[in-house]
Image (tube, rainbow, N blue to C red; front, top):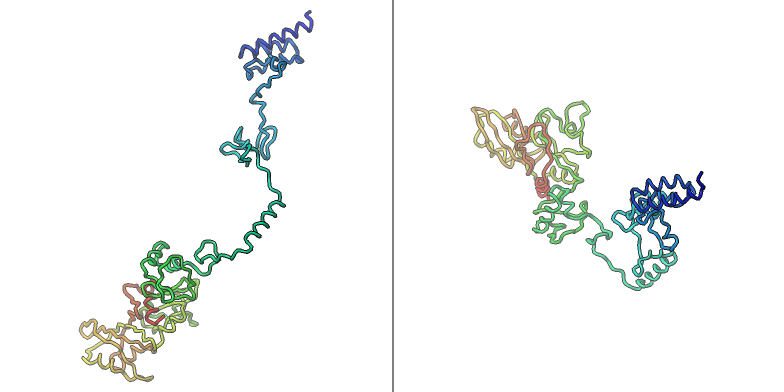
Length: 391
């Protein structure tokens, strides 16, 4: 039977041979460790000798006091916030330690590369007080209204124009550069001017700009529709064509139930009032179908005035548009808005009207708009309407 010292020496030799011979050291180390027992440090190091090129069983470094490089599996990763000894929460290696791409940055002092010490709250308070004392006697600088971040009133002019439908903001800036925009009677030559759409008068090419709060529509009213927004008797009315609008609209003037043609709808009260007031003389054009023959002086009679129950009524213009045998299509233009005015004038002259259509209300024409169709007026049309009544 061999002694324990013999087994220890065999373990030491096996561990040394395993550390010096790379791959062979692993098996040799395990053999030496098995023979030498668990208490022999050289045999255990020989089993893991694959990471130390000097040999895991060679303890010369420990005897000479030389610091050995840590093995990869022994390097510490427990650095940075939230890390543990098993490894960081996110990242690997240098990325977790900071400084590498993707890792957390740590502020360092410029002199020695050491982390900069944090400032205390008392220090920050004193620094703020010194800054206040330094700038206490200086006059306050008033920033212009167009300065970003300053407290400003109103909206930028190009934004108001873009919302009104004059194109993109860049296109509206080009309108300003071309000196085509004026505010309160003065042509605007600079960008970024702030306006109040509800108070300032804005015009493009001499036509007033309607802001987003106002809406303007033209309806080709069919025959049989009552010129009211609501009807207690359940008849078809103008409100049936605008019931899906968020803003309440009202009609400008009236048309007889059997009269077709253009009628305006808006929520601009002042414009609606002026369009129907005789003072501004907004002209309306009608096409009437009558049966002749008609005298040659019918137009002169209408222009001179026809005596009606409520006074004289005069036409501004009269002409024959089309004639087919005894059927005549005549055009009557007038600026009055009394009830059944065109029908009563022609009937008093001896020519009852079979069919009547209003084809124009001021600058707004019916065109090819189909019966029962509602369309939004363009900015140019709205501007022309406002110009017609000095708005």
